[in-house]
Length: 264
Image 1 (cartoon, rainbow, N blue to C red):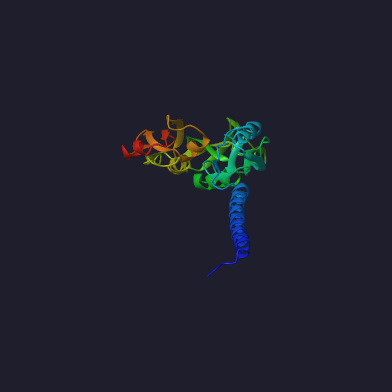
Image 2 (image 1 turned 135 degrees about the vertical axis):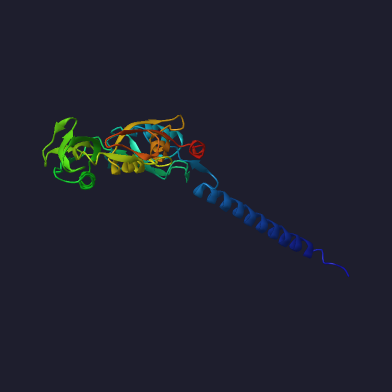
C-alpha cells in the first residue's frame, strides 16, 4: 500500500508536539519540586543552640551564626541566676528547626522582686516553712535555744538581723529561724539523700530539723541546667539509723553522672 507522502510531515509534527508537551510537563514538575524545596527548605534543618546563661546581646550574635532569630518574650526572677541573662528558651536546645525560626527567650529580670516578710514567731517549724515558701522566700539556717517547746519559732532573722513582719525583702531571701529545744527532745536522724535533687534533699534535711551545709558540684556539672538536674552522690554525715543533734549541717556533693549514683 502506498503511503501518501503529504501525510509524513503531519505525522512528524504530531510526534514532535507530543515530545515537546512531555518535555514541558517534565520541566514543570522539576521546577515545582525545586520551588517547594526552596519554600519549605526541605531537609535543611538547624540544631538550636543553648542560649541559657547568655546575655541577650550574645544570644543574638550566636543566633545569627545559626541563621535563626531570638526574641525576649518573658522574664522571671531567680535570685541565684545572673540578672538580664537568658533563663530558658523555646524551642529547647537541641531541637530541629528551619532557617529564620524565632527562638523565644525568657530572661532573668534585672529588677529584684520584693515580697513581705511574714510573722513566724510562735509557729512550728513545719508551719513556718509553709509560710516562708508561700511568701516567696526560702528557709535559711536553723538554730536552737533551750525552751519548753521543740521546733517552736522564737525569732526570725535575715543575715543575722531581726526583720519585722510586713517588711519588704527581696524574693527568695533565706530566712533564718531561732527554734526552741526541749532538753529531752534534742535529737533527730540523718536521712538518706543519695539520688535526690537539691530541692528534694533540702526538704528532707529541713523536715528532720537539720541544716543544709556546703553544696558542691563535680566535673559533670557545666551549666545552670545541669545544677537543676544534678543529684546527690555523697552526703556528710552519711545516712545512719542512729540519732544526731538537731541543727546538724549536712554537706552534699552533686553530680549528673548516673555511674556515680549506681556505685553508691
